[in-house]
Image 1 (spheres, rainbow, N blue to C red):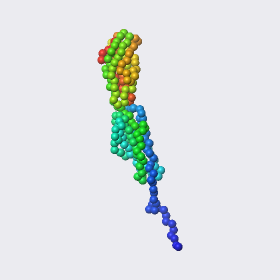
Image 2: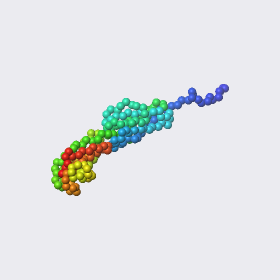
Image 3: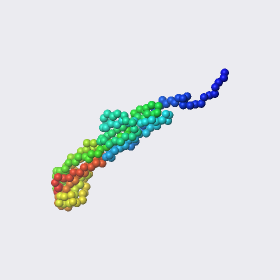
Image 4: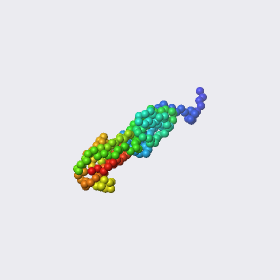
Length: 212
């Protein structure tokens, strides 16, 4: 009936069990549904584990809804390519439990467009002493055309020496616009079209010949 003293608790006699996955990672830093022409967008993700502790976060990326690439370890990733780049994330704790892959979400998406839209030289389809109509072509393969600004120069000699006055702001899909030149001095005035895409890149086209 003799018994020993209770032994002290030490690492050799302790079992630490963790069968619960860490919290699903939450991404931040993306452009959401907006487009950007920033050189790089950094997406970061956070997670937590209140048992064995968070060990690592890994991510995978894809572009324009293509296949996801191989997983890479890291709680952040720098995205610099063209198009819609999406990320998904997974957390792992010190016991080896892993969360499900989460995403893609707007906060973990970078919509990047670094290329200016295309804009053709303007063509005056009709002219008169009080105005006329201009035609052109414009396109943007990545983010799309967002806005257009059609202006005439105040110089009456056909040059670009004067100030520019906006005469029309056509809708993004428009490729013609009527102009009113009654406020300009008599002479020949050069036309200019500035095309902006949804990321803020711009292209400028001017009339091949001065416009009456």
